[in-house]
Image (cartoon, rainbow, N blue to C red; front, side, top):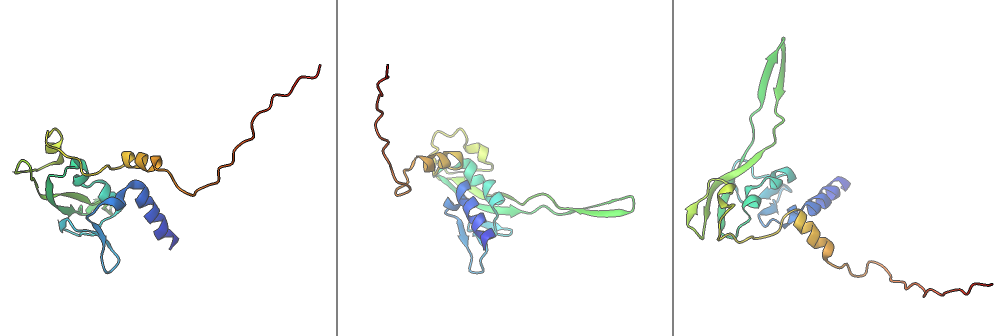
Length: 154
């Protein structure tokens, strides 16, 4: 229980909970509604590398595919090891710009667009905005007594 709470707090701190495409399935898995090819279960690492965050434009229409790397079997000196350390990767399956009515192959194509309209603020900027918001009812304000100048005895 405490592990799940810790994970939830870390997700809030990273700003992952604000994605409108992430939901919880009936069986308790965290899934992305935009992944149409591959396993739609997502982890915080998969969400951090989402190409939607790189584009961050209101004109983007897209679907995603999750690609899991295949394990590599390595044989040497009579030993055999399976290497599968690479994390899953999310890529655009299909994507297009609604303003220009053209397909988008890679998030870099939207970098210099004059019509780009950011949808939301991710990461560090979001954390700065949270810090600026006043927190009501956190503590008690106690005024310090005024300073009195003591006369020197002479």
